[in-house]
Length: 294
Image (cartoon, rainbow, N blue to C red; front, side):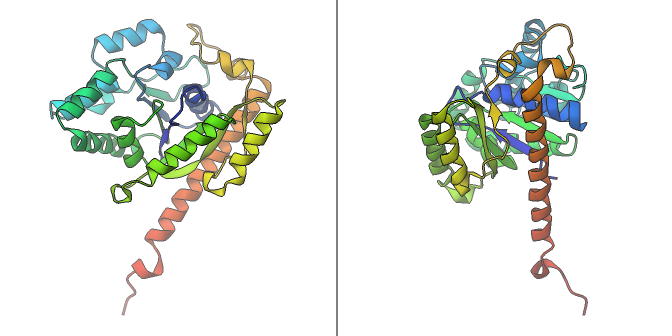
């Protein structure tokens, strides 16, 4: 089943990491899904949302981050057991016990520099592809939190993942950032690219006429395949990024309209995954590809 999703936008500040967190915890708590979050952002934002600072520091010191995994497979050209890097029991939500994390480290930017210097770009893509093949059959959904911009590592995720989602704020700069990303996507089609699962309008001020107008522009562009569910800007979602040492129930972290929006979004996300996989299976078993007994 195709279930690996790169979450990215060329522009920062769109609430992407918080959205990755909220989707992962909602899929686990309300839909019983095993979810792996791969933190590919050097800022390690989603890692700090799912782990205490102390636990993340220990993993970084012990060499158990995405940086260490990729440095071993790409720069040292040695095999690794990816399961050593997947941390279970993350999240401060009591019901979200099936969220796993491969954490990040600020050393990721230095790793990418070494990859470029040593001309190991092809090997990095091969390593990323191998990791995603290994985790596909273990987890129901894999969410890759990519940093803003189009780094060489982000390009590897986008070319090896099954799908991508573009979270965006409804404003002029974010609309333009999508145009830049779509231009990039059109380059080198022979190299392959993840399938667009949809643009996700995030952090919309439901009282703003400007936000409503930009949301309309995004939705009316059929190429965007915008999700029907918009994620509103709420205090609850802004505070959700702060990890708590003591567990809390889902409803206290995502109360009211925030929780309703997230559950509706995840239901739509799962439906789109099912539809895309069904269409893919249909193409593989099309009449032209089936052997007819003589």
